[in-house]
Image (tube, rainbow, N blue to C red; front, side, top):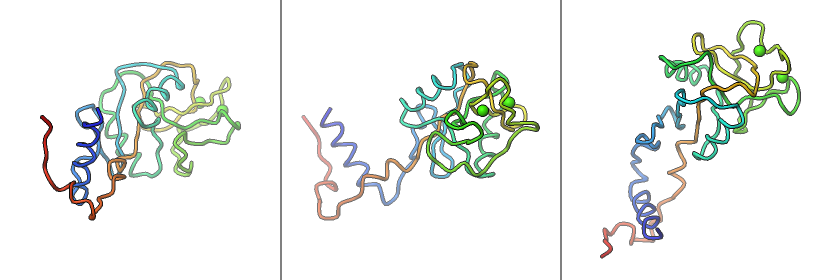
Length: 173
Ligand SMILES: [Ca+2]
Ligand SMILES: [Ca+2]
């Protein structure tokens, strides 16, 4: 395993000047801008279980920080099942004090008409599939969800010009 990590670091360092795809495309992640997104519309979980799954995948439930990002997400909602999908917004800490689980500022909003209405204490954010507008929703409802992770993570391995071993191909065994 240590060898595998060493090889990965070498590879990334060698190619960091001209990075390839930064998202794990083979694992259903897709890139938009500097972030990776994964649509999970073939499963249904409560908001907290959905978030746990996204965190275990190295990300978090999706945050939406601009109209452009919203449009990208809507473009991904072609024919998923269900009414809506979980996103990372919640007001479970302070009623009406919406925040994103990934820590990004809760500035861009796209509430559906009449929402948020805190109906029966709704504290979790979902996006309506047919319109892309947002609803404060029952956190215990079982829904599909969207994960997001920073796509620039792979660039965190900086090339070290003084370490020429990274430029020399080598093999084990
Ligand atoms: Ca609420
Ligand atoms: Ca609502």
